[in-house]
Amino acid sequence: MTENSLNVRLDKWLWAARFYKTRNIAREMIEGGKVQYNNNRTKPSRNVDIGAHISLWQGYNKIEVIVLALSDVRREASLARLLYEETAASIEQRKQLELAHKSNILFAPHPSQKPNKKQRRYLLELKYSGRQ
Image 1 (cartoon, rainbow, N blue to C red):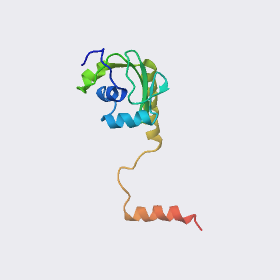
Image 2: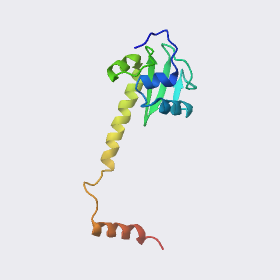
Image 3: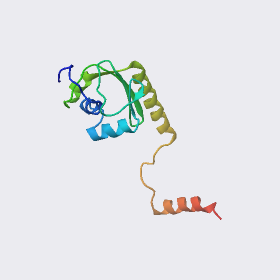
Image 4: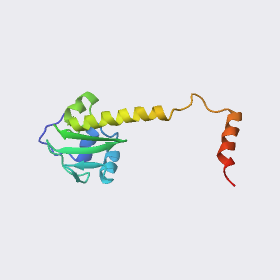
């Protein structure tokens, strides 16, 4: 990790903290409004401060973190985890979304195999039988 007195850009910090795979993706997410710095929309060149509140989207999950340390170097995940602390509200919200997703899968199960030719014909017949 680098010294905490360094100026680190937001896109570079998000990349070093392993929220996004590349700096370009981090920049696109910031410019697209998917990342907020202290509850405000910001630019990729914004310098990150220790104690800042960052909220970002990863897929369908909104993650809220507090900056604990600064780094402009991408390291292994165990060291990257030391750069931030996720808020308790964010953790709880992710768990609720995960539970909702799992329960939704039960209501829309996927078949174990693709339909064969006879079944496909039957499905197409059902689909187009109501059309005139």
